[in-house]
Image 1 (cartoon, helix red, strand yellow):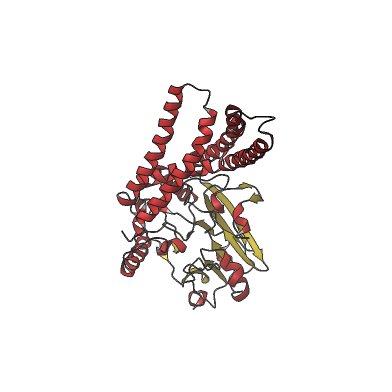
Image 2 (image 1 turned 90 degrees about the vertical axis):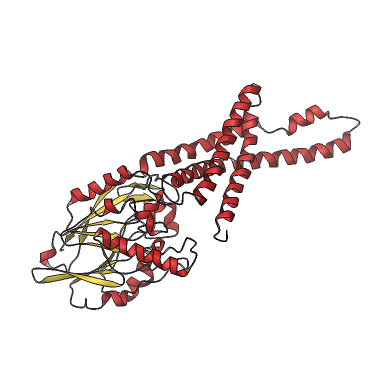
Length: 422
């Protein structure tokens, strides 16, 4: 098995076993006054859950590559590991306290063994784990555990519509009031509730937008992740077209492939999926929209990220060809880092760039114009509308999710723009 599945299984299982063995020390400390029967029942439940998750990891790696089974295992693993991590600092502190005390007792015993003997029982009592610290650690872990589960139960599919006026001084009068809807980062491989996804699509359809933009990351890794959702997203239509681009996840770069040919086939299948849904995938190209003899240009490029971790396939120079006469140029580019790295410096002709990618880290808060997320320390432009002289950038925090199967504070977004002439 040279495909990395066995190492992945061993690493993830090893992390869980080591972490759970350590945390179980706190559980035993808290239970030390309980009956033997109670302790046995709790132990069976705790380790039963642990080995069920480990078995699930194995099954999901070798038998269920996608779908509900794998998503359920991912959720269970994520919740257990992340919650238990919060207990570790308390146990480490307690271990350090006990180590220092043990050293002191050893020194004291050597210096005063005859004068002030220390019994084995008293030593054991002094060096035992602190029940207070163990309880505190477990209670602290209950907070993220509750938040994580709350985010999964309520945040993953809690779609919100954001309405944004886009003021464009050079906007042709024929386009004044044009309605554009943007979604981004579907990540279909993470979905586990088809009915909930459909609910978001129905919200999109009710908006009756003139144009729809999708700004990349249709899947997590593989085109087949869309098999169960292609019929739903193909419902999204617009009179002037649905235009889409690729994101960093769409190339299959984060998955193992038996050959380059297989990887290329996967990407070809992904391109075909856009076609099957009736979406116009723009691969470093453009489309002009003409109304009453006036036109605007929609430019779509492949992924371009400023970080070396992300592919730089995007070519604005190719996408711009033939758009010289267009009064307004709207660019679809998945990664917002592209804006400051290139667009504001080399492509002053771009009026608005539409991006996604950040997900708002799926964690933070947004209250009107006040917003915060840890992702802002990596991406200065991470959510909402940004301006630089006459150029604008909008970052959508995503329709789907990846990794953590939920959202806390940063909810899935459907953006509705109204173009306005200043």
